[in-house]
Length: 155
Image 1 (spheres, rainbow, N blue to C red):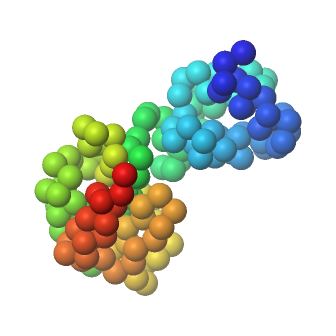
Image 2 (image 1 turned 90 degrees about the vertical axis):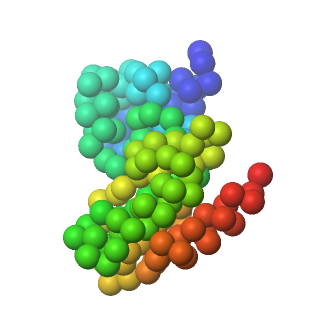
Image 3 (image 1 turned 45 degrees about the vertical axis):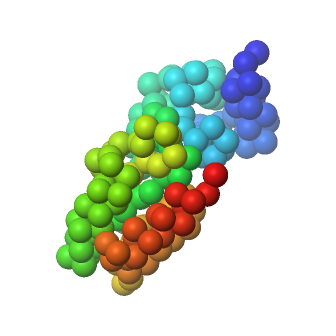
């Protein structure tokens, strides 16, 4: 049994093996592995006795359930109309320039991934940037770069 199969089995013991257990298991795998590999989705399908297509369909529907490897730090910029009107495109442009990647890409050193996300629930404080679980409201291109400079210093 591989490590991911063992991990999924442990999660199934913790959350149960009914269809309702799919989301908590998917979320646990993403927290642990940083994304959902094909092997992980197959192991989940096996444990829950559902199709791999069903697991993938659920995983690919949700923005926060990544189905491909991401960087150590995942930067998400809210893409709602409110954040758009408040300047999210300029924030994205500044981050793309700083990181030398485009939206949807990961830096070559695998340190950062730059993504958009559906509503982050902070429309009153847009534009909003989320780095992993840390929320940064009312970011400007300048403040977003300053925030990222601190992450660039981290090992």
